[in-house]
Length: 137
Ligand SMILES: [Zn+2]
Ligand SMILES: [Zn+2]
Image (cartoon, rainbow, N blue to C red):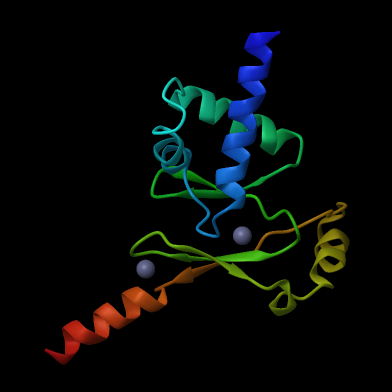
């Protein structure tokens, strides 16, 4: 029983860290945040729990950025912007994405679309500023 309690405590802590940030972190980042307060935590445990959360719909995966999967505790329909330079992931309100595209794609492909995720790519504000500063030199 004690072991199970410890397990769910870690589970809660992982979810809490993910919910406390809008940065769409990696498993490794979450692990680094928790390590000081949960010394017996392993990276494998973080991965295992994130996969489980993903399976039961508690969280979503944004996709792989620079070889690392990124996670999001915000499961409401929204899209993402990914900075190709620093790997920053920003939320994009779904109002920019045509709500009729699901039906359109369903019709064209003869499938049933239940959701979609649009990913915008480019340079984030910070990287843009940096680029401008470098050019201004
Ligand atoms: Zn950037
Ligand atoms: Zn998001």
